[in-house]
Image (cartoon, rainbow, N blue to C red; front, side):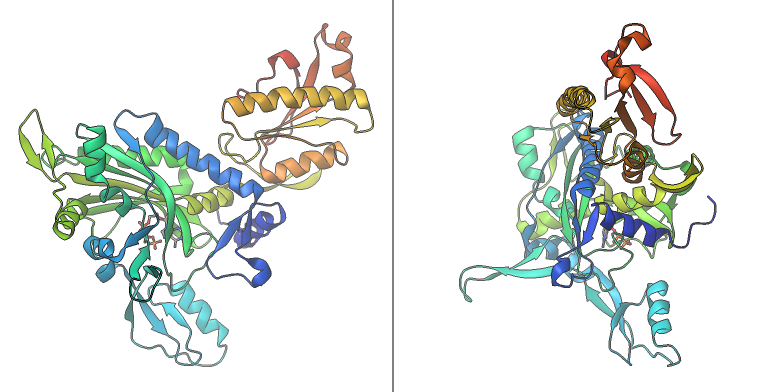
Length: 451
Ligand code: ATP
């Protein structure tokens, strides 16, 4: 991949705000560091990414169940999972202004030191800072109990392992997937959606028999599966890489770990993790809850604690990386333009329908008819919305759609109303976002699912 535009991140952040993708959280009250709100188009984009995850990892498979666990969990869950003790980052404090920063983030340290200009910054010794967000539940001081907002969605699955066994009777190997919010009190939230304090994860926990997994069969399978899935978000192969964690880099629960990384303007960064969690979680929850979380194989009359192969990705990081990859500046028709080269399956608007002129009722009427029928098709097939736009000249409308990544614009013009121009058939123009090329298509052939 060539050198990245050094202003790419700023350009994407600005487009997100301007075009209704993502806004700083609670902005009118001054915002909250590491928290973002999704606007209309960002919500559609995020929804499409999650839907793509749900379809491929869960709905289209016979060996995976979906679930949705609660965000609030008793503090005891996090003691069992090891997060209370080990889910920490090293924190240092600037001795001049007392700002606290993650000691293992050289970019954050360098930015901070640059801010002090000529002063020589000295740092305190690193201390371990726990990332779990704490709160309390209960109506009186006495009855209040400590709970945590989940630091990863994983534990909601493990604590329901027995419930799924007892209610669904799965045969091993099988998986449980879910999508949901996680919260981390990140010391230095930065780089827009990359490191937030509230974010969403999409995960699969795939339970296997330890003996069967000695050769890493399923670990290799899910590594490849996650890689193919991530590429399907519209990345070029050279924008991604797979990297194995060094032993001192692995999380406390991991026997082996690989990351899919994306080549961001800040360097190669984690997009997705494939973790071999072995029997860490189920064993610990069995010990701490006194509930047996083993699996009994009826055929082999064998009881064991399964190993867990985890696929874990950030939804918001996927949104950010997809936008960084898709942002393109080029020239079309002799004029500069900005467009998002988003994959068709995740673009927030599937197609836009225009009457060529808004003051010609016959054009508007026909365009409305086309719009209504495509809208219905998009809804029944769970595709992204179709929009209608008659505002401004046609060139401007194309540019507006390009900037939000709409793959196709459909224009109803005077030839549409005069079927004699196209062998007795009503036709429209369909414009391709990337090439700007237009072709005439019969309305009867206009299927939003295939254009
Ligand atoms: P990092 O090393 O970047 O802090 P991590 O190794 O702690 O990430 P995991 O615990 O493996 O991350 O979380 C799984 C996924 O959740 C990550 O691949 C990432 O996409 C996402 N994620 C983790 N932390 C954040 C965050 N603070 N903001 C946004 N997404 C996050």
